[in-house]
Structures are given as C-alpha cells and as structure tokens.
Length: 289
Image 1 (tube, one colour):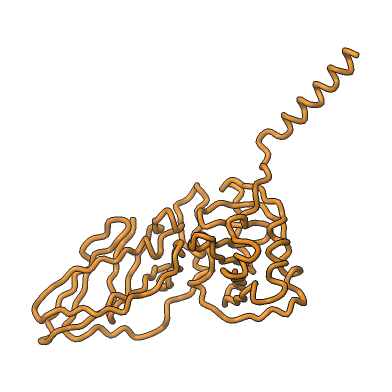
Image 2: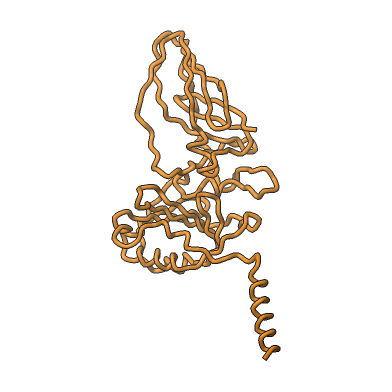
C-alpha cells in the first residue's frame, strides 16, 4: 500500500513538473467580440492581405459568417512569448469587430498565430483557407491602411535589435509631384517623441488658406513608404476645416503623429529613421532617434 501511494505521489509530481513553463490555454482572443443578436447588429469584417491588396467581407452579412466566428472562437489559444513571435508570411487574415461598448476590436492571423493590437502573440491552429472554401463570400478591395493590427505586423521588434519597419509589407508612397504653394514655406519646429510641431510662413502677398489633413511617410533605403494607421479604438476621420494665414505671418501647427501612426497602437512610438509629413502641398522632414 505504501509503495502504491508513493508511486501515485511521484506520478502526480511528475505531471505538475512537466507542466511548468509550458504555455497555458487561454480564453479565446475573440471573446471581446459580441455574440448572438448583438453581433448581428454590430457586424464583423474579415480581411485577407496577400502582399499586394486587401480583400474584405462582412461576415454577418452572409449566412456562413456567424458559423465561421463560432468555429474560430472554439479553437483554444496559447499565449506565446515575444521570443517565439512568428515570421510574417502571406496571406494575413484580419478580423475587425465592434464591442458592446462601441470600441473597435481587431485581430490578425498568420500561419498558426493570432496577434492582438497590444502586440500579444497567441498560438492558434485554424485553417482559414479551408474554412472559407466554397462559402460564396462577397469580397471588396480595400486599403492596406485599414488592415487590422497593421503597425504591429509592419514593425519587426524581436527584443534584440532596434525596432524597424518591414519594407516588404509596406506600400511605397503615391508617386506624385508635390508642388508647394507659391510663397508658403514649412519647417519642423519640434519633435517631442509623439507629436511634430511645424512652423508655416506666408510670404505669398495674400492670405493663404490651409487644412488639417496630412499623411506620414518613412524613408527606407531611399524610398518613401506610407505609414499604416495605428488603428486606435475609435474610427478615424478628418475634420473638414479651413484655416487662414495672413501675408507676412507665421503660425505653428502640431500633428499628433504617434496617436495616428504609433506602433503598436497603445504604445505610441515610431522606429528610428527619417520621416516626413505631406500636407497642403508641402513636405516637412524630421528625424526620429
């Protein structure tokens, strides 16, 4: 009897020790998404990026959308350390949904991994190609800037080398001639690590009208690339406003670049490099160290 008890104790101890340090199953990363009738009202979008374009479909607009989400939700996930972060391969699948509080929820899937907006990596085995086969999905072409978790996917951050943009995943900036307004100049006044302050001067001889819209780009090996949006919790849109600057006057405008393009979304930093904003026909370069 004593030998039997000792054997059972040793078996139990071995079982405990063998589990130490092993990834633990977690709740599904899809749990924050609404379910049932609420999900039908809020809708979920599935995106697929093949390295060139993004195709998107509204899952709950089709009969198979809800079933696909439930299949994915049922798959167990294991939280991985950043040391085991996967290489980025194509295709990349993304889910964008709305939570009951109105905030936006995004996930990206590559190979056997799920990536959250917070930069967490989950091991999750799911065959999207098989799940979508023969489903009769209606797809539309979208923009790379709208792809879920784009800033996390597009920055290599392995904890050993300095974070750097993955140029192979990014789109070169639009090829166009940027013609500054006559008599208008702009230069970087201050970069505080999150926002860029720009000084505009008007020597055109008349009042200059300008807006707040801009885009940010990074120079990689001599080529300018458009930065992906950080995709914060709430949808983003430009306010259609117009400002005026009298002749002979200067004005400072501040652009919260890390809020819009920060990597990842809630950490708000940009990898070191040469950047510029393009606004109102002007370009303003600045360094991030």
